[in-house]
Length: 254
Ligand SMILES: [Zn+2]
Image 1: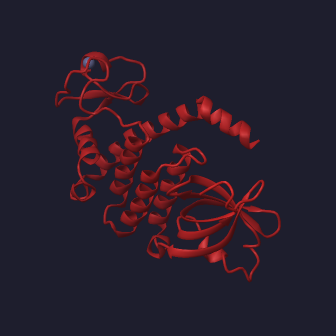
Image 2: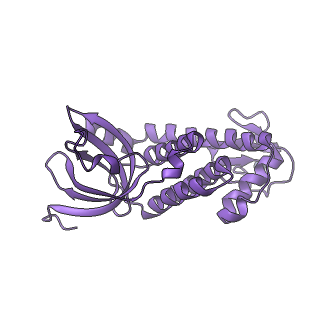
Image 3: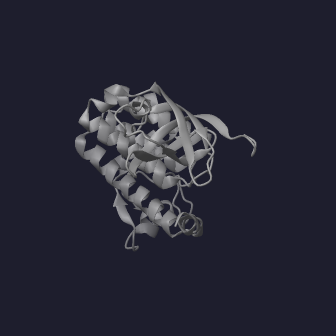
């Protein structure tokens, strides 16, 4: 897209939306070529609007956008795929919103990252199809951490580099992964990591999605993996919130 062009078209996934004024909506979307964008959709809350139905969260859409001085404006919207089955199931809907929140929290505006777009689209598609929505979300978290440069080290001690033994090791997301018992025990921020949980995380991190979905895990195991990954995601998001880039971006918005 050259600077002179006033209109561009893009595929997008709607991350979130908020009402603006009487009839408008501000949309945050994720696009393959332009990364995260904030767009204004004028008049979509009018009953007669043709665009409204296409601009729901996690809808996969084609947009025609006009460049504006403060906001880029959505001039046309059509649905590529609406993920209707996802919307009909409350649990899956909640999981889908979580994927959108993760993408939002891990990205800056206009920082293009096509692989993240593909990941989000794939994540939503898997979530719609899978018999294992919980494990699908764990797969998504690990893939997101990898693509954004925060992949936890699960094979070697992050302090001494020694290969990890199949025993209870320790996990510290602040230090980027697993610590051997010698370096993890008693360390502030390092929590014991069950060897079964470590194995599941390694497998999901390194094997194709379909293979990971064949894992037959107990509820307790799934919850433990969820807990460890939630801690990891929280650490990364908190670190991003403190980063100079993020603070600059905030100043730019306000
Ligand atoms: Zn060590």
